[in-house]
Amino acid sequence: MLALKINPGLIECGTDEAGRGCLAGPVTAAAVILPDDFSHPWLTDSKQLSEKKREELRPVIEQAAVAYAVAHVMMEEIDQVNILNASILAMHRAIEQLKIQPEFIAIDGNKFKPYKKTAYECVVKGDSKYLHIAAASILAKTYRDEYLHKLHAEFPAYNWKRNKGYPTLEHRDAIKKYGPTPYHRKSFRLLPEQLRLDL
Image 1: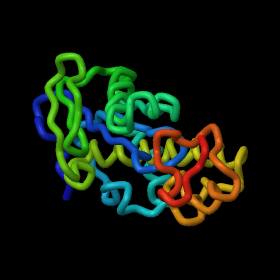
Image 2: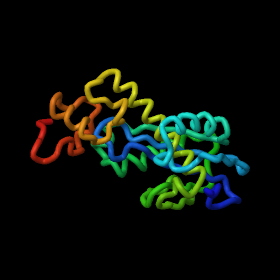
Image 3: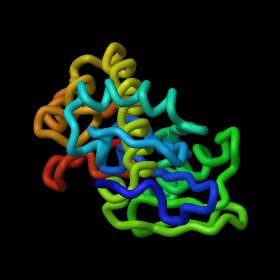
Image 4: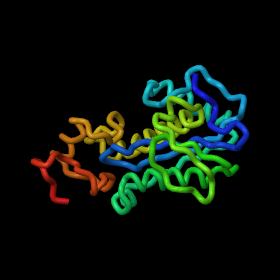
């Protein structure tokens, strides 16, 4: 059973990102504040759920949340600041958009930078320990997947509808065959060393 939050007495948001390891598309973060009486039998780390279950949970989370927000950091910015900084930036932007500002932030993972003067704690595998981080992981994943579906319509050869921009063999084969698109992250190694691209 996942815990509701770290500090029961405070307005606390959970935050998580999706798409850090992708070759294409944005890194997307969500921030969620859940009510103190929230529970749901399915809610856990988005990676442990099927795409169908995640899609079904998204409106449940959005309707129940005290506040939620989602933010993308696009490829050009990822290339400028690096993927770790871009992930944290996406989390900051999501938190900033919350209609109620949190008194405490619970972050999935082990890296974060202070947001204003708000107290925070990083939790490794937080999306399988805390409900609000799990909720954020589901929103980040479903919003990012939705965005990649739109990009797929523009560049169907890369099959982003299925691989979501991750470095699958199919995705790398398409890069090798057709070259990179404007949605590829130029700072990432798009192909193994022996198959260098001229970017």
